[in-house]
Length: 447
Image (cartoon, rainbow, N blue to C red; front, side, top):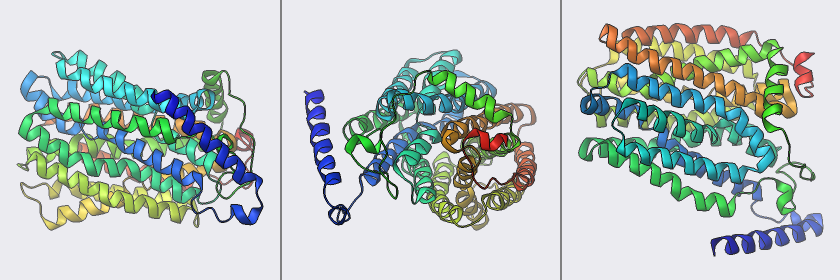
């Protein structure tokens, strides 16, 4: 029944939009909302659903350590597997979207992460945590990573790309804003298992929206991309995995790729790997309640939205390399002060840090994606997928090493200082990325 309704809806939408393209240009101009914005909204909601899973790891470290006696290093290893697979899946997901379509890939991904979260309710050993949350959730969320946003933006938008990239990037922060306080309250009042079930259900709720409203290409509904001219939908790309690996080898022969990958690895280390995973247990070590620490992370999500959208606006107007240098330098300085701000209660200096870090959290994404487009043209979505893989590898290393450092030294201070130094290095790396005036695919980078 749902399939029949879906097919009828798709057919009607396709007929209506094709009729719209056959009328005079002055009638087309009266369309109030371009279909690209509907697709962007569905993408935004999907990323919010996926963000539910990224909200849990930091909240689960202490409960799992208490219930099962697993070391923080073991739990951190499971989180690092999740983050690494999240990144390594992204470039292949972009190619699979070219082959099978955005809608199919995202529906399968949402179902996979829901299955992993639900299965974790019955786990009794740490290796099961690594399978359910590390493998399944990592593969699923990786398929809805920032490469998903890049693919949607590249296909559906010509104008306003920087702004749309910022908005879709902020979707992850919006999900964090919604789910972090909720999951923290559930964990504290009812335990970690109901929280895991909650985020699984959140993913399943998104599936019908993707199935009914998402479209793979503007040509599917007879439209030109927003701000561009009509182009025919390309034939499905065969050999998706081969293409992904080929693009990696081609891009890896260029200097800008390694600079972008290196800076983004440090970005991941200082956000997902460090703050998202270890801020809550670190604050708890200093006597702060879990709900209060989680609420601070949620506040990061609020200002993350503002900072990322504003960064997208800036990227359309200023040199992306200089923006990255400023973002990383300020982030590094703030991390050096964090150990001095940890106290049992929330106080103004900590609030200032949270606001500042939120504005800078993923403000790096729009300029990084812009530089990928500039350097690698039509292959930029896949190249950005590999750059994102480095982001998650950096996050995975710090998620694991941060837990080990806590076990060995009894505090997280060493991790904060080391991450601040890495951010200073990223600022310098961003400044030496060269400019390409007229990119034409990976060949432009090779030139």
